Image: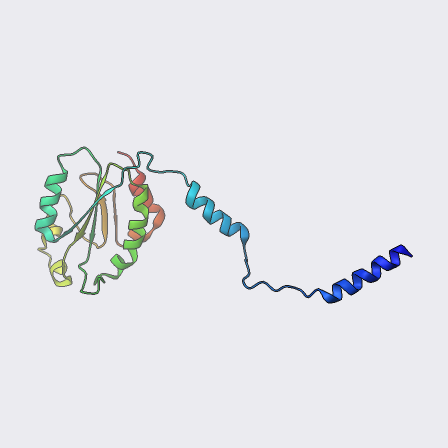
Length: 176
């Protein structure tokens, strides 16, 4: 008898309680925790906590001066050559537009005591001229934009390869 009374109470209790619908749904709790974990406990690829020094130069003269200045140090120097940007910050070079966020994201893989020089080569007509000094310089020999290289070293990525996250990260991680 006691069991029947409890059973009847449960049925009446379940008819009184209405299901609660959540205001928001969490579709993948492990994904959220994974993101938080990776963000706060990621492997530190730059243990010295020293940031990569970034330089932005425009044109061949500024580029030449900056490289003379940086050649005196022992730090690695990575150089990105890309097409000039308009007043809205967009480059005329579609491959440069695609590659730039990939390269800037991969900079976290670069050694902390290194330099990154972003070179704006100028307008499209200037770049297309076969006598463009960026094309003639024996240290650059540029053919494609964008081009990412390690200064005075054989490591070099150009064109669409600059949009490949793995290749760009290897460029920054690679030691001499």
